[in-house]
Image (cartoon, rainbow, N blue to C red):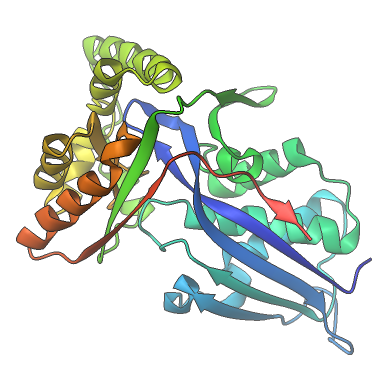
Length: 308
């Protein structure tokens, strides 16, 4: 058992249009968590403290309902251990909360990874991804948070299957983050329970186009893939200015743009040389809709979680 441990986990963008609930990319916005055991900390599984900094300051979640703690507790349960007495967590995050950039997945991964390192639990990356997926409910943000890069994650009856995806060096991911939130639960509730068979066929073709387009930097395929039919048509109404912002991205040189996760952040894919112009255009489009926003871009996916 160690006195303290620090874990760093990236944010992520998921879906990328046609890769609904299965494709994700690690984003260079980081959550850092330090876990330690305080002396004379009381009973096992008892009260804990969580210090929040950065974007986490906005959270009003009780400590025992925080994904940081839930991940830690889940790792302990998996090992047949109680959460130790005197647990203290201190986290600072650059990942916007409830904006479609994987903040809850990053927190769950961080908590579980911290427990494994602090308590010498047997939990490899595959086990960490399985555990965090159970906590999160779907693997699209979890897989890139754990493994880094771009990932395809598929929940099969016999376990989670994760495969790396190739991202062409010419591509950039450009994000426009508005100053309002969309809760994942609300975005899930907007989805229909069934789709016509023809729509399912189009969705399958578009998901194949996404994988091929990412690998080859093919703008035509990416434009088709980002024009999603599975979830975006039902969620766009939750994001004020969506059509204006995605249209501005394309006008500025992006191959296409779509919701990052369930939104409201919009992610555009295009040539790295046009990233700054695309980001500025999206921010201006949101400003014209009376929405403040900020932009950043990534010329390559981030790496996965790290423990120190």
